[in-house]
Image (cartoon, rainbow, N blue to C red):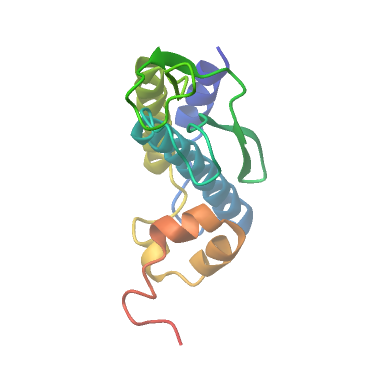
Length: 164
């Protein structure tokens, strides 16, 4: 229900692209940063669905983006136990022959991915700035300095040789 309300709010709040206020730009950057974080977490979960060994040790633990405040989400590990499969010849099997796999439901992840991509589309559609805002507007640098996920996704200035 919360997701539906959020989607309705986002699609109903169209902004004018003529001279958006700094507050409108900041809110837009916050929204995009949250969406990029949520989508990145989903992609990470999907790509690690069969990961039995991580740098931290043990199986991959599903990530969840929670407590999104002021454009930054806290990324936490899911606490559900792993899925145990009997595979005695697997290099990561325990002494009883069981391997721990991440407890990730692929259908749930795909559903969440579709949902957040729709929210993203609604936010972009109702953007208070022009399409090329992140490419050439100096105000974009303020967003990039505040929101790291936004910077990593949309700041191409270094690749274009614009950084001093």
